[in-house]
Amino acid sequence: MRELTFMQATLEGLAEEMARDPAIFVLGEGIGKRGGNFNTTAGLYELYGERRLRDTPIAERGFVGLACGAAMTGSRPVVDFMFSDFLLDAFAELVNQIAKMQYMSSGRLKMPILLRGCIGIGHSAATHHSGSYYPLYGHVPGLRVVVPSTPADAKGLLKRALNSFDPVVFLEHRELLTTKGKVPDGEHQVEFGRASIVREGKDVTVVAIAITVRHSLAACEELAQEGLSVEVIDPRTVAPLDVETILASVRKTGRLLIADETLAPFGLGAEIAAQVADLGFDDLDAPIRRLNGSHVPTPYSPPLEAAVIPNSKSIAQAIRELAAE
Amino acid sequence: MLDRNFYRQLYRIRRVEEELVRLYPTDQITSPIHLSIGQEAVSVGVCEALRPSDVVFGTYRSHAYYLAKGGDLRGMIAELYGKATGVAQGKAGSMHLADPDHGVMGASAVVASTIPQAVGYALAMKMRREDRVVVVFFGDGATEEGVFYESLNFAALRSLPILFICENNSYAIHSPLSSRQASPDICRKAEAMGLLAERLETLDIYELYARTCRRVTELRAGRTAPVLIECLCYRWKEHVGPGEDFAAGYRSAGECRAWQQADVLVTVGSRLNAAVRQEIEQSVEEEIREAFAFAQCSPFPAGNELYTDLYA
Ligand SMILES: Cc1ncc(C[n+]2csc(CCOP(=O)(O)OP(=O)(O)O)c2C)c(N)n1
Ligand SMILES: [Mg+2]
Image (cartoon, rainbow over all chains, first blue to last red; front, side, top):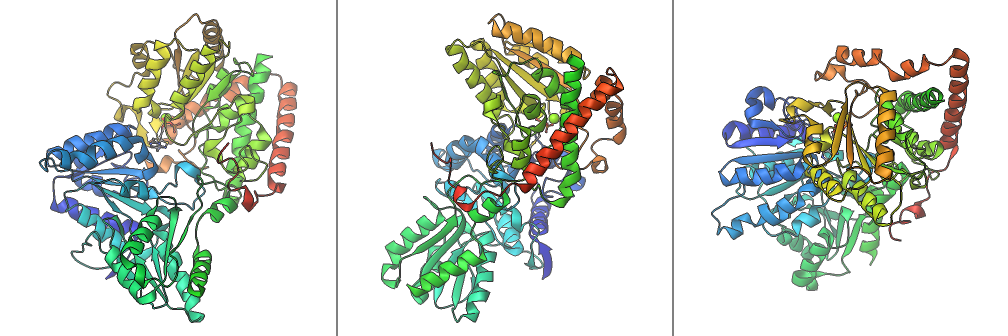
């Protein structure tokens, strides 16, 4: 095990896979010599040159459609958006073409495309550089949606994506990029659809994702001193979603909170709540609760920005209230 | 009079941005800032030829055209401070600056996204037979987005009263134009879409102003196809942030120096006598001091402001 940052871990994963599979190439703005806006490809240009690190013009719809065509040949495009907000400019290519291609070609045209970019609020960049639209992507049949919270998971899931044959939307929380964590030595992949039990507990289950996993863990420390034992589950992939692990936890605790920075309506929490209500109704001792970012475009002003997102305090409070219900 | 106006505007924009550079390390302004230092003359030369009732659209590199068009300075600085007295009550920051009361329509952090909006504005104006014109500022990189061509086609098809100003500073972040476009002749592309297009090879504010005056008069009278003017210019600072980036390796300080030696601010200033220059500078400095003081002592927006303006 070594300590790596989230950014280093995904870079290591990408480098390993590019060394293994010559079909992988990267598309994006500034991913060549520059090494990516967030160092997502740092050092790879020196190894693989222009042939496999393709700087693109600023033409998102164009290069996502292009990735679709390239994938039909068996190539494995990695599309690097720096900010995943710009994927919205290519939404139709992703949703209407890439996601549906395998199904509409009776499985003959595979779409092994990895689309990656930053998400997340917390750096004063306002509303065009902070969107986290994974519920939108999770809605679409044919897509895999990955939202890791630790360096080890980020690496393992990225490598898994590059070994699968489905289109994967891989979303990296900007505030996590420089956080550190232990990453296993040697080959390390993480299966899609396997939630991680980040902390065990018996009173309340908290499902958290990306940055809220960290906030939830901090909240747990505080609550442990108050005698509350909280289980924290990180689904790691939004699609496929591991409901089994969540249900098993709720069977134990009887109480479920979903803490998620992104928007509540039609979101991750709504989906989990619906499935748990369906399949685990009898295990519930209290209503399922959600804690989400405010339903507004991200405001710039630092105090407003801070007010929008759940933090360890608000999560702790929500857990306390749920435990008391 | 023209010299004085140019100097006042150029000096004001330069000094506002220099103040941002000076104060940025204090973290009172946390918004990413994309500075126009070195490129101000494009905004000033164009906006000086407009009427207050004309409107401009632009990009995240917003400060120069915002100020040149008459956007409120106090409201801008307060916005960058994230204060309730900002033009967007602190919700926008630098990348979404807008002051519609003064004809500065929305800015956007998404490359090329305001180009179709500008065309739509021009279409609706034309439908109402107004004699206003629309100007849209964008970078060389924006001409790679599909929506640029869609917008040009539409504007030409409907002969809309719109002036496209491409601020070609040769780079999109660190990528030179030649690495992004097989045929980097932006004017030819505009012509192919049915526009009139012309290129200004040097950053000559007088020439840009004269050409804009002529084009705007014709557009107002409905006598011409839409027009694109490509202005070659140069960004002195890093793509985003207050610093320099010559160490990043994608361009040289020498390349920049050539542009700095032809600083339009200095050229225009040298046409004024020292007393006039000083008078302008003093009044601008006073205005800037006042605007920053206003911003600093303004309150942050209250928590209950979070949901205001989400819906009409
Ligand atoms: C749709 C979209 N893609 C990518 C980006 C990231 N980005 C921000 S600025 C920029 C460069 C734009 O260059 P140019 O249009 O020449 O304007 P300049 O910054 O040089 O003024 C890029 C690629 C973005 N903001 N929006
Ligand atoms: Mg440019």
